[in-house]
Image 1 (cartoon, rainbow, N blue to C red):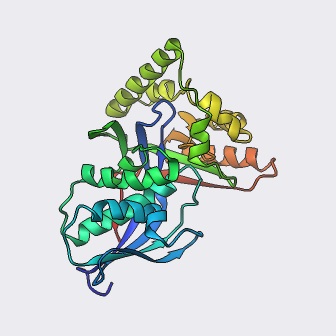
Image 2 (image 1 turned 45 degrees about the vertical axis):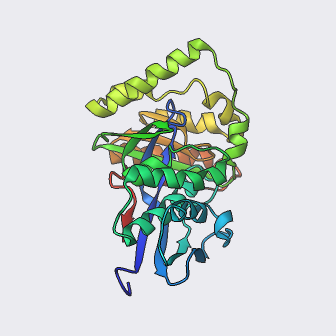
Amino acid sequence: MSNAKNEIRLFAPATVANVSCGFDVLGFCLDSIGDEMVVRKTGKKGIFITKIEGYDLPYVASLNVAGVSALAMYATLDIDYGFEIEIYKRIKPGSGVGSSAASAVGSVYGMNELMGGPFNKVQLTTFAMKGEALASQCEHADNLAPAIFGGFTLVKSVQPMDILQIPSPSDVFATIIHPQIEIKTADSRAILPKVVALSDAIVQWANVGSLVHALHTSDYELMRRSLKDVIVEPYRSKLIPFYHEVKDAALQAGALGAGIAGSGPSIFALSKGKDTALKVQDAMRALYATTAIPFETYVSKINTQGIKIL
């Protein structure tokens, strides 16, 4: 790094949102996958995206998720310099593990660090949400919050922004399978019902409450009974080839629960212990290897730090 005060390199982590029962409110942060970004001060006023590697994304700041969140923050500043952003994209857009959130968070976090930290994490989440809305046509923070805060988070409210950090049991591991098809968040939101049955809502909020309690008390058996989604999964699972077969294979291999990562197509499973998480990975791979669809898998500890300086 040339000059520590003028340039910063970051790891912006992938995240899993919804976590089965917690649609649009729950999320957790992954450790083994994420984007790298470089943010630096420049003499010219404004926000400039100067380099993108990995995927074909727009360089125009107002059309790029990282640029939009940066512009939202920049609009509140009275400074005589600007920022350049480099994006080394490792999280495939449309994969369901918070690709747009990583970009949205990385730019504002980097700018904030270079300015000496005038904004807190809640304020950074608010700026980042403007970028996330470009990708999904909807302001939600369930990927942004775990990327910024780390661990498990619950977004109690977006207006005003109110984020709760939830303890992460030390032995929880995530297994992810990413079928190489793209599902746009906006499309997967469009198929959801506007009205749900009261009986389903009761089951769902009981599951959310018990899952949060299970995380606080490291009660793995309660986690197993709580990682169930009766509202969103029945609709979104139709967009993911072999979803139910993969989920069944993961549960049979010992996973505590499995569900759709964000809006898909990635599928996540949570397990107690790395050995079980690896067995779940083997089971997912064996099942998907029988299909014609290319895929990737990875196992990750829960990342309790969130975004970090490299």
